[in-house]
Image (cartoon, rainbow, N blue to C red; front, side, top):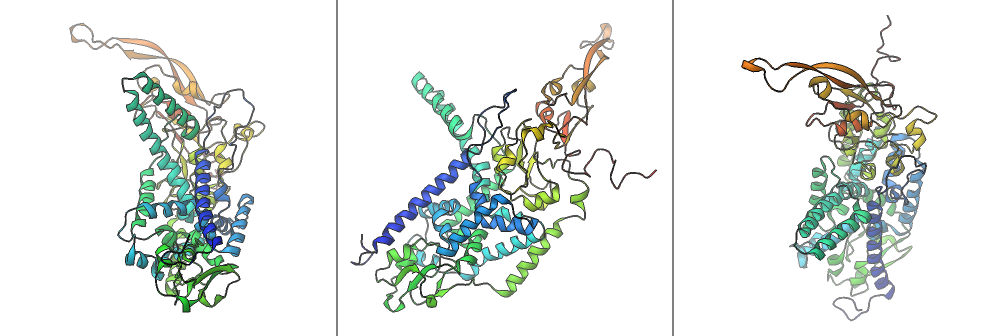
Length: 573
């Protein structure tokens, strides 16, 4: 292989590393997708089984190795979560070879690299491509301002910066939107094929759908509340690659900015012989990071993705990557404007307090903010939750969904349980097993069920007697009692006799006659109810159910209680 436009052969090591990088990107993206598809339970919670239900793979591995998540968590909680120590390995890698994670490992970066290649663009070649790949300081500073604002928000007590972390964005948007959407499309396609009047075709379609259900996404079609916005934002940033190659990585990525800060100390880097440069701009045509690889200007070490395309393309041996290079041709510090940085710092520090109502996290919560079992109290929860969506993806009953504004602006896209869509499986603790930051604790089945300790409560069920069939319409119904999973059951029934009208009117237009029917009217025992939502899920009354669950009475709070006993609001009389 020879360098483009020259008879000079590229260094064999660089050619090999270029192909190795492509293989690495494919491997890590495939590994990420495999873990994401495995973030789900395809078995069953059979009664009487004592074996704990656990996922066989560390599906949260990419999040645990994420230094941006680690630093946010340390700043917001002032503690180091043990699993996040894996991120030290990525920092060490950056200190040796720079931002190789962005060019070799990051699955979200690989996704943008791929779409930047396949999307038809007016900047795909020639002078327009060269201009697009030049360093644009004002544009590329944005990710550093996002990083600073996110870290200042963490200091103020919120991990809301996780909304823009690339691994969180990838898990959330692909896991909660792309995969369920693909499953829906495939289900409709297989349904159409099964209507073909050919038994062999119908059988093949049925077997293919069953195989996908067992190996890829499960038999139940999941739906996640309000994910249209999450998917729309993913499509928007991917489409921006049409105008700016690797738009996310260059402009918005806070993890890339953080690694750029560490990359200034990297042992491996670029060395340029400016005198040899003929201004062919082949290095700029192939540059992934917009880091000024061309001769005559200084190389931006903090922006380089270590793709090595520039050295492979250079026909004059201007560019060399090596350990301990000459630093005369490098700019090692991010190019930030002081005033903008100060304004960003102030905005990041003030945003979280501004979004909170005084003491709102310590007094009570919105009735619909039902957190997963094992969740820590609300203030600590917002300090730790990075909005990655792992807990929602793994929930076997599709019960957890990204919040919109139920928990305020600060709680955007944090997990809440929506019982009308799905209920919390009685013996399931998978959400805590995949949470990378401890926002949901890794409790055991015995702790959740209350074997030897008090059971974990996430809320309490209440009845709307005006809508309940046995209460309001004298119609027999005990579905909620039958599905109540606690032992003894939190829902109990009272046998009564109630008057009810006959369906037909009497003779001569007289009112219908009255008769007496025996009914079983349900009641909730708040001391036994755990708020799982099974009763609300199965209630046959459409639109608004007759039984509903709110967050009141949850175990994690000492103030969000039904009665005001043992609180500062208790009457002293």
